[in-house]
Length: 459
Image 1 (cartoon, rainbow, N blue to C red):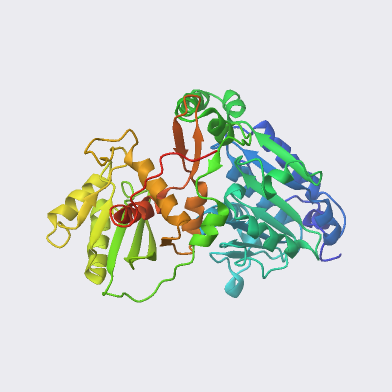
Image 2: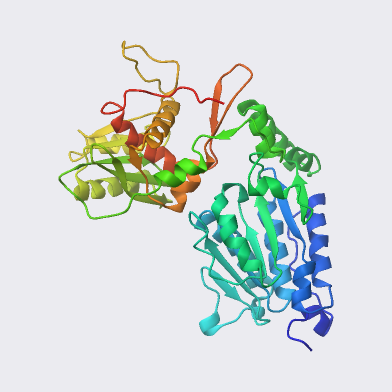
């Protein structure tokens, strides 16, 4: 038997991951049937790859995307010999999340198919006895983090947040294999590589409407989902709701920070502490020990505000976050420490005020508060929006340099704006933690070199 033949050709037994959920939605059944067509092809691997269909899974949020895609990846890996697949995304946490689900499915159901010893599963690569391999890597700012591999298939996770340059860097890895592309995520803009693939005849598009999914779910899940969707419809603009939950791209919403502006700004470097300059810390505390938090450290070089470190925190309680800030202050001797004192942030704020080392340098910048104008009156804009647009102004003027970390890039790219029918500005983000800490540190310059605050964005 040829090495590239499917396992089912060898022993007529399909190695299938069981579906351990109450229901399988129609769109999940469609994807499942597509997988069956792939692994039933009785041919060599090169031809199998050509028959594996490119597809785009355009999903509303919380519909079970990662569960069925992980099932699909695990099933084709187990049943087709010698496949070389890679999951890529803007940041490691996204790619590793899907990778870990695939690994979990195989470990629970077909652990004996995994290689052992020096080839045992690692954090970023798993190898099967049938010589199939799955890798996962963050792509970085331009795709360079993943371009060294020859692949039979690429799975783009959270496709809407991947830099345009990365697609051009990664797709050539499929040139010599005739490999396939799976693209997963929510709807976004009406331009760019992802949007163009929606009308590409080489791609099968599966569009998943969260409202339709909710209607067919059994109770009480149906009611829970519909109540949540109704709240989101009231909270978001029509276009944003369509993007997030109905899988419909819109030209009405725009990125606040353009890809070109992000690329131009992410040029800072980490380097040794220079105590001749002031250092500023911006903090977005993690929530209740479960959420992700962010710490941004800047060096104030007068003309340029340079980010020197970006620290992502995970599962830290308020006391642990406070201890982390005090430890960093011992190293940097911050001029100011800015944080949001709303919600769980109030605990960190109170603890920093109570500590003799940090009490005179800690300042609360609450997103929901309203800043004071030059006449001493409160403005009509909330401070959270003011800080975002102040950061935008600094970036456009070249007054700030940020670190080229994937988390920073993704957070900036995720910020969108739209004006509703009453011309009210609506700002949303799907990953706000890094920007929340960065914009607080950047607010330090508001009273120094930049007097202008941007309140609107031209459309």
